[in-house]
Every structure is written in C-alpha cells, then in structure tokens.
Length: 261
Image (cartoon, rainbow, N blue to C red; front, side, top):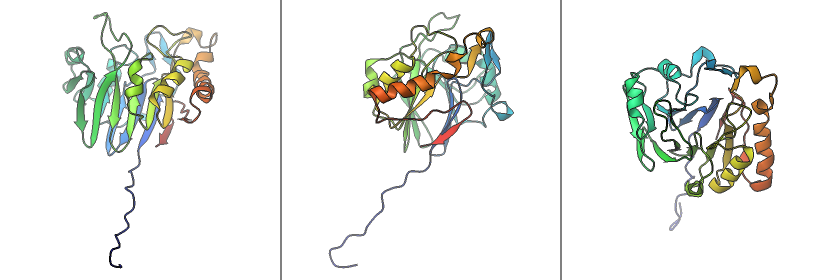
C-alpha cells in the first residue's frame, strides 16, 4: 500500500430479511434473526366468516419471538389462534388491553403506548398511531395502534387504520404493510380502500408496499354473490399507485406467499 493511501472498505451488506403474508392482517416478518408475527388469525373460520385462503401448514407458523396485536377486534385478536402459539409467547398489545389477554391466560403480555418502544434481540418495535376504533364487546371501545419494526431494515405494519397526518412522519420505511380492504363487500369507518391506501403510501414514502387485509376472510353466504372483494382490491391498489406514487414498488402477495427485501 502506498504512502498516504487508505484501505478500501466495502459498504456493509445488510443480512437478508423476509416477510410471509399468512393472510388477512397476519404477516410473519423475519428480520435480523428475529421472527415477528402480526395479528395472528390461523383458523378456518371466525364466527360467520370463512377463511378462503389456505391455513398455514401445521395450523400455524413456527413459534415467533414476538407477537404484535394491533387491537382487540376478533379478526385481529383471535384467542384460539393465539393459544396455538403458546400461552407464554411474548405478546405486545396496545396500552389498556393487556388485562384482556392476561384474563384469558396469556403470561407474557406487554402493553405498548403510542410513541413507546421495546427491544427484542437486535430489533426495536415501536407503537404508532392508528385511526380505528379497536374495541371489543366488552369493552365496547378500545385503542388501536400500528407498529414500526426496525433493525437493519424498517417495516411499518399499519394494523387497521384510516389515513392520518402522522403517516408522513414514519420515516420512509423499507416496507409498508397497508390494509386495503376488510372482510366483507363494503368498508366502515377506520379502514382504507385501495385508493386511500395509495394515498397513504404517497405520504409514508416506503421503498415497497405490500397490501394486506384482503383475500382471506369473507362471509360464506356472499362468496358466490359478491366475490369481487376477495381478489380485486390489490389490483385496484396497483392501478392507484401508478397514479399517485409510481416510483414506489408494489408487491402483490397472495395469502401464503413470501418475499425478501
């Protein structure tokens, strides 16, 4: 090496990260050696809703290091699915909902208020705002949150939410997991349809958008009368993204599909 020269160093290579869309709002995120599972729904039916996508082989993914629950609605906080993962699985939930899970026998429950964070391995999980009434009967009303999962890459899991101003302050994550529908032929307040999800993506500015909350649960008696909501929302999102944020990559994963990022 000549006098005055400096060694050439290669930029750090990020370890591989992956996510698997299990279905509805259930996503398995594998980042920096940590496995995070969101809003587990791992059954063939929830009340009048039937699962149209395949159930994961063996009934559930292999045990995660952390389970994130965004709110208490039954299609996001499904107690039988959580029991399959184990009573002692580390479970994070919105502030004020921990007692609900403890009452049902879960022993490793942590509440996380909006703006607060926890660590698991080399990953930091932070609760962020969501605009959604996340209650259960009882209680009739309850909080809802989204989560940022941050390590060598950053993933935003929105849970259930409508648009909110703070989306532009989420720090341009690598991946945004955005809900684009619900579980029926129409949407109520506190949800995003494909057009609103595209507007959310334009505010968040992620590198990749993966649509969730579609193609999984549906009222059985409507499947043959109104099938479009089961498969059209992601195509509508892709078209809307071309209009409002064509520079953002959209990855359409059917339930059961995986990708790396």
